Image 1 (tube, rainbow, N blue to C red):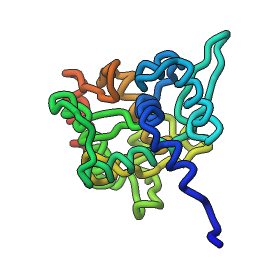
Image 2 (image 1 turned 180 degrees about the horizontal axis):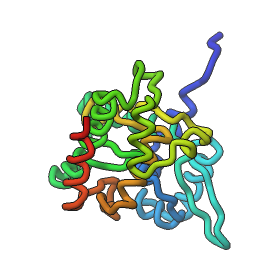
Image 3 (image 1 turned 180 degrees about the vertical axis):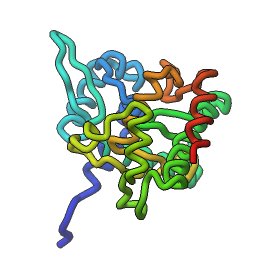
Length: 227
């Protein structure tokens, strides 16, 4: 008899095309109304409600009530990371849906992965943090160095708040388009939020892509040039 976690149940939940569309829409880190998710999934509202109930019961999404309205988001970072890994496997094995190349390019350059920066820019950010010894240690044991803590404070991020969160400060996430790691965890989220606050980035309302503004391009270049 086989023992241990049974991945087939979660795989079946993700595997339905409509539920896949719902989960991929939620990868932008925003909370969505059920009606908007129905349109994104290409199904009727009643069908979307059924899919959302299954995803909720399966622990893949969470629901928040605001008055008479209900909003859905991914349950946690683990779900976002799992979807990103599945995207990476899918891209490598050639099972790619029909995506118009001009629409795909911005996603590969910079996008939101649950709540942190992914794509080429996300990988470059992690590379800078490690190359400058702001993050130290092996992949699964990355820690913020003293220099890293000072760097974050100078950049407007409270290290005390990061360390007070329940989630890991540093967590690596496999990037589907770059085929390597970008930074997740509380630090990855804080860096993305700080760049949005500085208006370095603008979110695409229709996709997970984020575009760097003129000031953002310059600011990011100066940021990762620090030694």
